[in-house]
Length: 444
Image 1: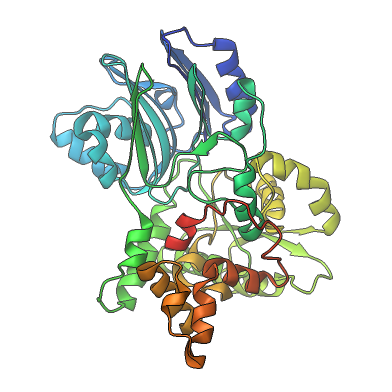
Image 2 (image 1 turned 120 degrees about the horizontal axis):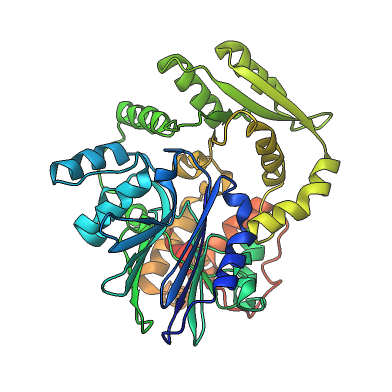
């Protein structure tokens, strides 16, 4: 990961160089390999680099095109950048680096916002058109890479982590987001638990000029595919091929990579594919929890014995978790959503001794319905569909005994009910009366 910090003035004032540098220093842990700054007459860019592709100074950021008409700061990895680079080369573009950053910049120069439809990867970036005085910023399709925004009368600010904004403002709690935070342990889409601090939404780009006039557009919406799944049958062979190709694409790195082997199906499958199908020499890293009933070292060892990676196992405890919870919370800028986050942070401190890249099985449960809360009973699905069509109008359902359960479900927050059932014991009335603001969750 890398770190982005940016200030754009709405009133043509010079940027505050000291504050922009301080914003970047707050997230220096994101990019310990290099740093860079650029200050124009109305904006400032700061960058902390974690070098993964093209370790030379040619990959330094902020990065300019040869004519110095554009400048970019970019956090992420574009897995198909070599293919796009070849396409741009046929159009006459030359390249001075082997980085995906340059490919992103020149893709925007060639295709404008339409370049996003070509990208396969995770990214957040800001491009400034120095001639026209316009800014373009975008976030990847699923919002894997973070990009936060704060604005007031004088500035529009961006950063990879919320803590950077403390250089310009004081934080206050966003009470409208508490209901969602405590119910789901995370605030989705644009809002955060801090007032007036927002995310650039997943699959969204934003454009603005020196006057601060903002145009925002969602170029990809995962909810559309979920609400309109189509009628095609599931092709298991195609899914398997796509998974294997995706796993292999994620190994693109000039510094090697590791695997976080939890012992679960997802990371075990990644290990199996890279060892068996691609013949890779692997380093796997695991956490063991001695005398804990949910310790998965047994399954980790099964996979390690079968595929023979160089396996590294680290025994951690509840004391390690408690001692490092404040640090993990500081890094995440919000309450830690899962105890495993702390252990993964500690594991990465060990794995980075071999490589700065680590592959995990994150996201597979969401993609393939691996959590119990996805098993929604038919009656609740029916109630949800009726709510979409009729709105929350249970009185429109006949008051007949066969329909009373359906009437009751139509009056409830079905998505929240499923989460509460799963969490066993959460209280739906704890924050009664607060703005729920969970439309995005209901859609997905």
